[in-house]
Length: 164
Image 1 (cartoon, rainbow, N blue to C red):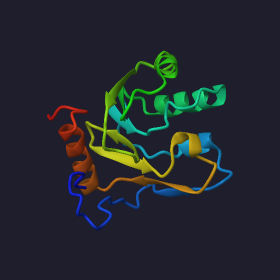
Image 2: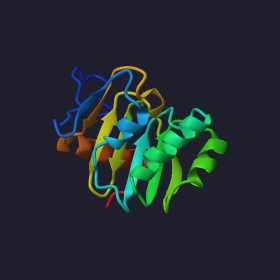
Image 3: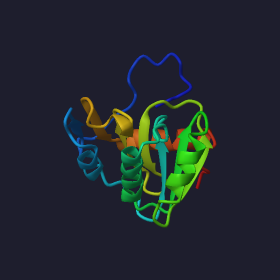
Image 4: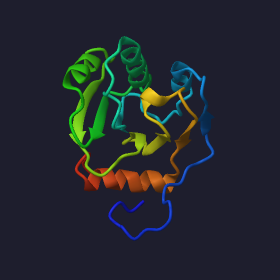
């Protein structure tokens, strides 16, 4: 996954068949979150790239977001988008996380939705933002080892995380 190669003609992201599934209209968001793949995130750092994660402010969405983030059992979640999210919602959600810090880092060149553990170098991609789950057909896919390694390097290159 070479983010700097503008001449790339293929789709460089590869997925495994492990815990990959399609959501459909009518799936409850809570059920989909319960099916999110395990990425070894407990007591680790997770990077989430979803430009609409902190977009909505209604109570049902807040509960859903808290459930999704707490399900990771991470010690730190780094939320990456090109501009800071809704600061009030961000602060409110941060106060609702169990033993987990929430940090924003600017990431200019990423639109897709990734949930990625930096220590285990495992992650998955959701075809829609959290606020779209259950509203239309979308996929949840575990990243291949090669794609995970490329994504990890892209996070280092863009200053989101430090190299080991």
